[in-house]
Image 1 (cartoon, rainbow, N blue to C red):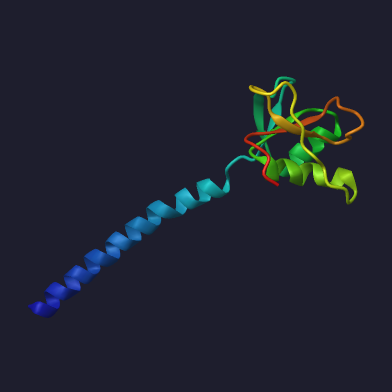
Image 2: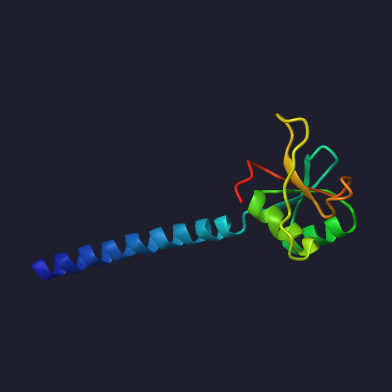
Length: 120
């Protein structure tokens, strides 16, 4: 009787673990798929989510993007600087986004805006 009870408890425990794993795996996958890039209008409003290759293509055609954070923005602009360190800038202060340009001599589009403060 004790063995049967122990086996029943073990089966219940294994079932609970299986259910927890079933619940957790999709949540982990959701986190991995978090959007890092969005197409953006001239006011940095999000238009549509982009993959990394789509974001690269968009800025290569002179269109703006908004990035989840500075790391994501830096990853996009770094190749344009050929070994030099890109420096972010901000205009007018509050309510505006920090951003990069693919050419620091030309402060027009595209803007590679990022959310949050610079930290690298």
